[in-house]
Amino acid sequence: MIHPVRTILSIRLRQLYRIGKDVGWVLLLLLCPVLLIFGLRLLEIVRDSNRPEVGIGFLLLLISIHYTRKDLALLLQIDLDYRRLFAVEYSLGLLPFSLIMLIVVSDWKNPLLLQLGAPLVALLPRRIQQSNRQKSARLLRYLPRAAFEWRIGLGRLWLPLGTVYIAGLLLAHFVATVPLIILIFAYTATTFYEHLENKNLLESIHFRYGLLNYKIRSQLLIFHGLLLPHYLLFLFYHLEYWYVLPAALSLVQLLLWMVLFYKYANYAPGRLRVQNSVAVTIFSVCLFNPLMPFLFPGIVIYLYIYWKRARKNIRLYYAAH
Image 1: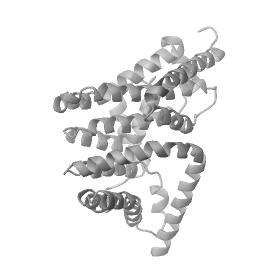
Image 2: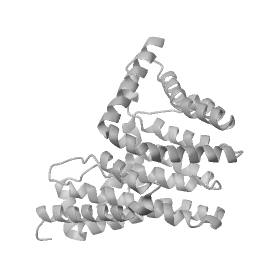
Image 3: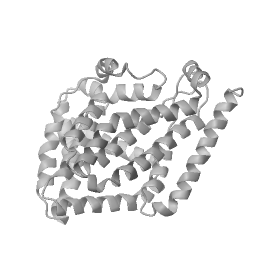
Image 4: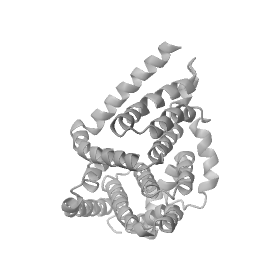
């Protein structure tokens, strides 16, 4: 039993290496200072707090990963206890964070929570993804068909996002919870905008409402309507930090507009998918950089350029509209 687990873990390491090559090592190096500052801030929270909110945040993220991984059907065909494999993967994946918190700030609560929680997350029941999609269809019938990205994305990820959503409501009394939920949902939503509508659906939206205007409105209504209870709870518990909420919403809204404009700037009839991961990475480096106030004009220019490209690209195929 040990050998299959060892083999699959080695495959995981190779996959991580390929992901690094796809994103680009230069971009990853550019991200290092941002990640370092974020990591130091997390360590500061761990040091100053007697509560394990950082560990809870990591476990919520792990639960989301657990319910979105797509290799369950393959693992079920192998003579291998996939729960044991998940437990080993999750425990090893969280071990560096546990060691850093234990050694650097002498905190034992968060590392203990992570290392005990990782195997428990591995035991959470899983089903093959298709059944989840079928069950979620009933929950999404209120979304208009023209909100194509959200119907597909929420239908695919309704269970992990629902888990994170409910946990965010329960943990809203922690200051960092709602901003973290906003970021998780925003970066998850960026993946929704990799999918392109078919020609008939796009034309029906464009000729009736105006494509970009409709997409901007629907994005605003769905994203912020979905998270409105979190916004209200943040103001209820942390009114003295009210300014954090508009600051976080402004940043993620810029990110969501970017993926929307990038999608239609690269639209072409017959094309099914737009890979936006590199663009999201570059934009995020600028958006969440400590020098962000100095980079903000560049961010606005970047958005404007892709908005113009998106309009020009749509007019290329639908010149009369």
